[in-house]
Length: 336
Image (cartoon, rainbow, N blue to C red; front, top):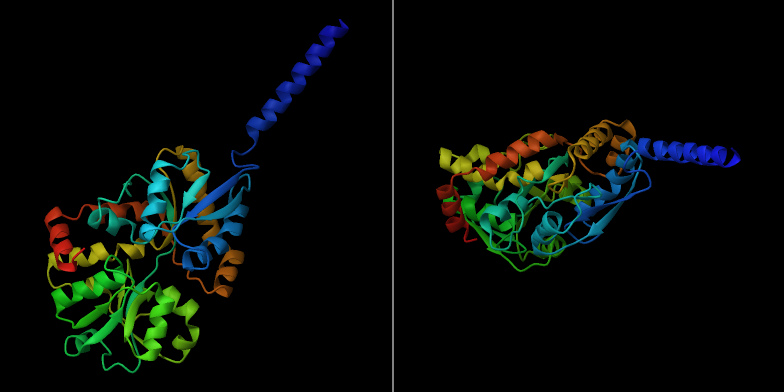
């Protein structure tokens, strides 16, 4: 009888422990990695550092959220890792490069992912990017750029800071001259100050966060913005897609403007259980509405212009549905 009582008590204890564990959130006690397609210290890392602690508060189980920096291939290395190597249990996310879709269509030989298969959690900041010139340049508008030359610095021919001006040259008759080979925007900025080049492309957030003195001193003039929609504080700078004169031109402009809808967002690999995808989407929705997070973001000079995961997925599907003849013409025009 004593043995039976001991066994029964043990069974009850095991059952209670098992039941308690079953009721615990999946993410309790876990560490979640966020793959960042760049080195530490950039805008991608800044967004991850700011949003991570607040997202943790709103995620059931409150997992630790840590960045994993994975630069290479303009973000392709990180995206390929997410699609083919990362576990699909929901413990690895990524903040994908904003040119993710462009590369899938224009550089397919290097791409081992399909952006449509990722589970998009949402975009924290749907970033607008700009083509901007130093204040001493005679070019002050897109129209001016059709009449006078402006030399722009760029990292490489595969970057949007090369592709967009090149496309504008062909379609609009602008006279941008691109000088490639710079290691990053900091190096181009030095070249602008020295007068070696007159401008560059860059995210609006990057301009504001890394060059606030330039913004306050009106040191640069923004000619056009590239994105899903206009930045709230750039109401008078034309949106690239609005410059299209034909449907084909607008399709090409929408294509290169996909960087805006991806912005600085979060994504899970294909195969993650739907209920965990829903948890992340709900946590991000709560985070971007949290006054504590919004105050932190404002203090750290990051823009919060959220786009829900379903809208991101729709916009990406639309871009990837661009007719192949248009993509081929775009490839030939920008020399990618």
